[in-house]
Image (cartoon, rainbow, N blue to C red; front, side):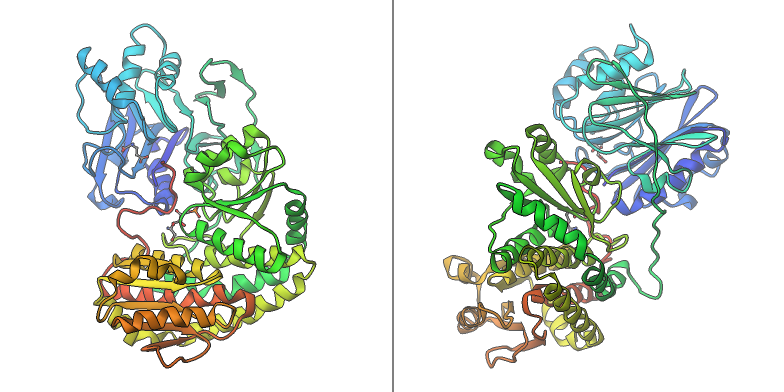
Length: 588
Ligand code: AGP
Ligand code: GLU
């Protein structure tokens, strides 16, 4: 979601530098893009709807001589996806160019005042008020002070990068979304994440919330709102640039599904010490909470079952976006385990900021080294799933589940047992993957369906939620995940002849009850797709997933990942980039 990239340096093709940076940020998801390049004390702007495609750009743009340029990939929040709404945005004099990530919550009031003062707007965005506010400020102040004053008037969690035609500086300010500065021998870079700077330099400064940075001959950092000078501390990171290609696979999602056995085996073999350490932290905490969004939240739900059943420990789970409203009872002894693939999800970052204020401990289970959540946590454990490109999370989900199961077993000093269950699970996933063609008849039925229901009990309830999410995300079919027992409290009313229902029936304490629920659906004409080690007579279709003991939720999600993928491809959709969704969700 939204990528920002800015360059000032000795290379006289700044536009190209920014274009290359934006390309690395493409994975975050966007709907339009734009670049403002300073040349001869004015800005030349290039903006487009859709994907970055150099062939569609003005051919002279990338020949301009320039040493300063800023660019943006937009994920629209306010105003449709149009060229006018794409960033960068300018003020009336066209000398201030600005890119923005976030939502200016009070933009309507500010816009009304600016219109009264004669400012003319060309877009429907919240963003466009910011260059005009800076323009107002520059009537009485210098560039940096005007940016600071304007930014201080904005409500919400925002990050801006702005350039002025009369200055050789780039100024950035933030209260929310991530911004990283990179310093090489010949240039300064500013971007939404480190991955786009790492090809140039490993010398990085992660801009803190409520600070601004002035990038020119040197870098200055000022506090917000006051504008006091702060220490400028670059760090040299040791991370390697991570790249990922599809290889022989037609999509990243399929490749990532196939990577799961290897990742799970790696966790089983190499995470023993780390999980023992985390188990100790959890034992000492007074109140532990999992927080996450989407798939990561469902991993948290699975975690609550692992901890209850295996470790006899109650752990709370909350959707991160709701956790903000549940913080009153937190104490300095509370432990928050933040689950996130990207490590950038704003819904997770926001409550963590408040946890930090209250003095609670934060543990991050994230896939991205150096990400915001990674850096703000007291303890961190990387998922080790490797870069995940497809918007629909697959391998990061099963990696989270594998680690949570290991921690639950570590709590009762039986980590070897978890490790051996994961090894069996990896083998079983390999078998499922080998037989993926057998899913075709089920793919055919589901492709024709408008609604799909998914049920499970116990830990399989989390599988039902995740399965429904995978289906709706990439196939655009309405799917609903339910706890089996909840069915007759409402959703059963929606079952009629031919309604498909996926039933998770593993060999555990939920078996008899979930089969009864499946029978209730079948009696109303529903078509039952059973995912189970046993072929029950009431199943219209059976997908075998052998017994994997407590790790079953890791194996049984894989057939649904494959089903979703195959349906999306059959319907002609791009499974890697579902409509309206972004990989990194950095706005509220
Ligand atoms: C997963 O398939 C979704 N794209 C989405 O729900 C995702 O899990 C969620 O946005 C959280 O992302 P994170 O793990 O990067 O924090
Ligand atoms: N709210 C701004 C817009 O809709 C910024 C969106 C973004 O972060 O990409 O243009």
